[in-house]
Length: 140
Ligand SMILES: [Cu+2]
Image 1: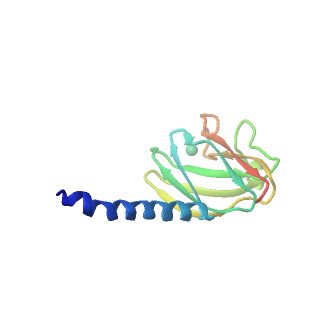
Image 2 (image 1 turned 90 degrees about the vertical axis):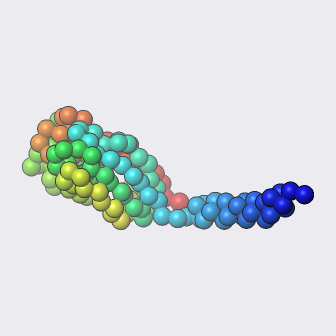
Image 3 (image 1 turned 180 degrees about the vertical axis):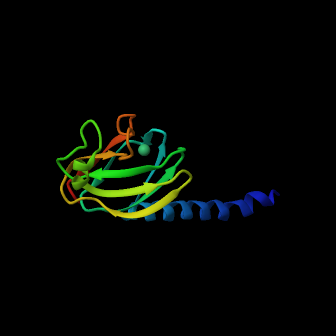
């Protein structure tokens, strides 16, 4: 009598199969993508964890109104109270963003497990709260 019930069944099955297929893809080591935003004056989130040496994609969106940068300090170093000339030698990796920018960048996690400091190197921004950490765990 109700034709919708009859035709509805294959569609439900298809939906389940699609859902399973998508789940399987997600579990099979697809590249890690990290999204975060910059505002005046914070990183959000300001802490993330990745396995050593992992290839990943960083997607950074700038929602603030002044220039910011994402600076990852070398293992065992930090910028202290403020980022100055002496700290530049300890920069592991840096990306600059202007207001309104959105960047997607391939990035390989450091090989050395540990906690790395993330800061914005613009004058006064570290002191204003643009600080975070990257936690690198033992590789797979
Ligand atoms: Cu900044």
